[in-house]
Image 1 (cartoon, each protein chain N blue to C red):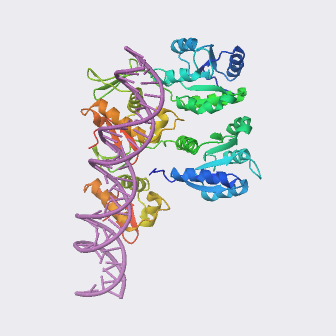
Image 2: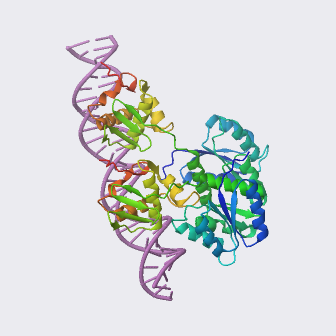
Length: 234
Length: 234
DNA sequence: TTACATTGTCACAACTTTGCCACATATTAC
DNA sequence: GTAATATGTGGCAAAGTTGTGACAATGTAA
């Protein structure tokens, strides 16, 4: 339905009914979520699961959302995780403080699920910066992450999104052998169940797309998996 | 401390005391400002001085801030100027309406100067710095930002404002693939709740307007979004 | 007011991609 | 050499993505 890239959102609120409401909205929008009902728990979860976004209530037992935000933004390992603060209308004057400690947005209660999801999307969009991805060129095979194109010379190659991601991964880690399991993990994403042999099929498609002149670049490592290498192997 | 921004902010409010208060806050933060006390005046100033941001009260004699916003956002020559709407707390439910007509943010009165400046900074940061208004010509397709016309050779193309902005964005960022979400963010504006599929529909309309001779310029990047490119992809 | 234009959504059509299977072929172990 | 194991290949059904026409809501101009 909505192909979100499996973003994980951590919901922190002491009222389980609110958590539930949010959880439903997130699920419908295709996000994964984690829940915490106090700050302590939240911290553990953040360290363990590294959510892509934190949604925290302003008023929380055991420390306010503000405090949590400040702590997250101070620590360079967590500073990049965007934070949205939920405030009740009456506490609204505090919202400035929220933005000041580094929250990325705030939402005043009551809010509609639609608004929530819209804000969340906007924040995530902004938080995922377009990397300054340089094109990768190996032996005349060029992959340009900006235009999302693969070319040999000026000939553009046709391939599906999965093959593209697979190739990008292999090219950015050339000269290194990966097992099918590792590739599934890196290219397909951790929590999908897919047969290992599926990797072979996609490698096949990649080789086909690249064509015989350059297919030596994708090498089979028997008993292990595959490797992208500019060095012709035997 | 605060590097001079040189940004011009237009303050529109009928109460001179509020204008004054805002003016002081802006001055301290290093912004230039202009003032208008009604919508008519505001329009003239916008045309004459091209402020970098407009700060308008919701309730205004001679037309509401909403109306002004709508008008600004509709006209492609002013659509890029960010607008922040000031609302009284009691009118707060209207904030959604404000965002819907394309305002970039809203601030509820009473607010602190600190909040004002914080929001303003955030909005300006987000605003897309628009380059010079030189015509862009690619493969015979010409977009002229001054006359706001798109032509192929001498044939003028018919399209709505949204398609125009979409095309302009894509043309000024050619050879780059954008997701639907990014396009919504850049072309529609950050906080509008619109379905991602709407982008497809507008792309469709654009392609239709451009016609089959040149529609190869707008390319679908499967699994991602779209790209404007002079290079034919097959 | 009426007529017209623009916009966002939807439903369905058209098209692609995906994962998996079954079988072919290659490589290794015994 | 044969069996066991690993990898290559073509094809297919299901799932997913994008294209398309129509519609209702809204705004605008006459």
